[in-house]
Image (tube, rainbow, N blue to C red; front, side, top):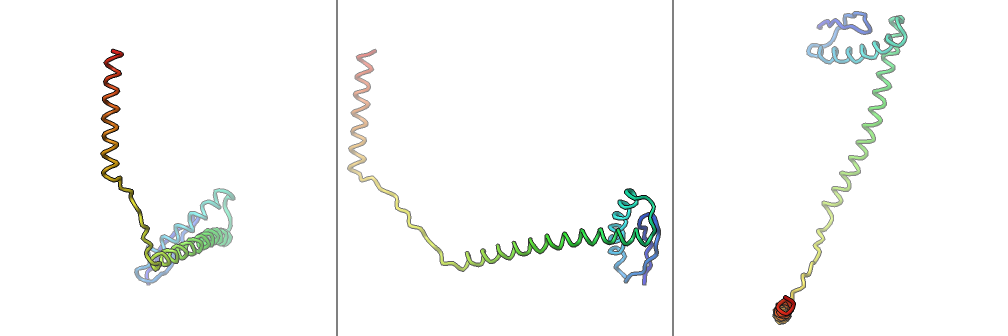
Length: 129
């Protein structure tokens, strides 16, 4: 069983762990050390047991907050998955869209009116100009 040297709050410890878990132990020790350093910067030198207790409680508080947030997010994901499943299982609703078609005779009549209007505009321009 490997022994890992860790430092928490300026104090060194030798801790045993399972083979291959050294990285996890160092990571956890760093988290605890970060909390211990906050304590020692605010309070100063405190007894080892109290420093470890307070640091552990601070980490536990953070962990509890993250667990609460994770539960909220899991509930939100579950709601969205239910909505997605409901939408996928719903029958496809195809909306009918009708596009009006202008009859050819109306198009022709409008073109004729436009041509007459242009001719009248040209005549007015000649008389004015």
